[in-house]
Image (cartoon, rainbow, N blue to C red; front, side):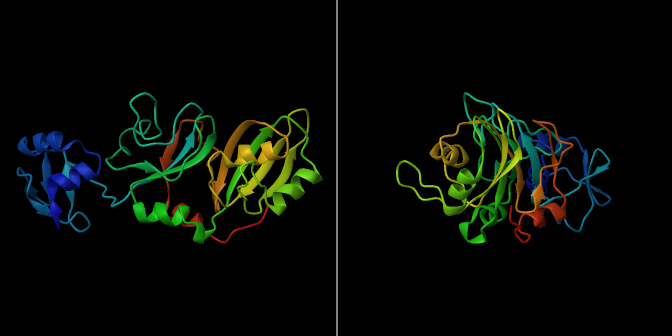
Length: 241
C-alpha cells in the first residue's frame, strides 16, 4: 500500500503539486470511492485507480527503447544541452528515468531508458558479458588485417587492452560499412579501436544489445515502451558475429 499522491506522481500523471490539485478537485477514484486526500493508501496492483474516469495503467518500472539521434547526450539532465530523457514526453515520461549506459553525442541508435536500477545494473555488468553491435562507416578498407586485430584484442595508445571483438564487412566501397561486436563499454571504444588500425569512424549506429534489436520502425529521435519479451532479449544467449 502506498500514498495515492506518490502512486500518481510515479506514473507520470503530474508533479506532486499537480496531483494534489487533481485530488482536491475530486478527479481521482480508487474503486468506487472518490479520493480527495493525498495520504490515502491504495494498492495500485490490486485496486482500480482512475483519473477523470480513465483507469490508470500502473507500471512499477518503465522500460523504453529509443533510437537515439545525433546531437543529443546520454544523460538525465544538463543545463546546456538536450538529453535523451528530455525527449521523453507523456505518457511515458516520469520521474527517475535515466539511460542505461551511454552513446556518444554524435552516435545514433539503440538506447534503453528506464527507472529500474537493478535492471540497468544487470545490463551493464561486465559479468553478464552482454554484447553490443554497431554499424560503423569508416574512411578506409576493412579487410583481414583489421578483422584479425579486432579478434585478438585492440590495444589503445595508452596501453589499455580491449577484449576480443568481432568485425565484419557489411558494405564495401570508398566509405565501407562494418559490423562491430563488443562486450565492453569503454569511453569512445569503437572509435578508438578503429583509430588503432588507422581508420576513422565517420558515422556510428548501435543496432543491438544482446538479442534486443533496434526496432526498424523507429526513426532517429523516436521511442516506444519495450515489451516484456524485449526486456528479456537483452539477456538471451549471445551469438557470434
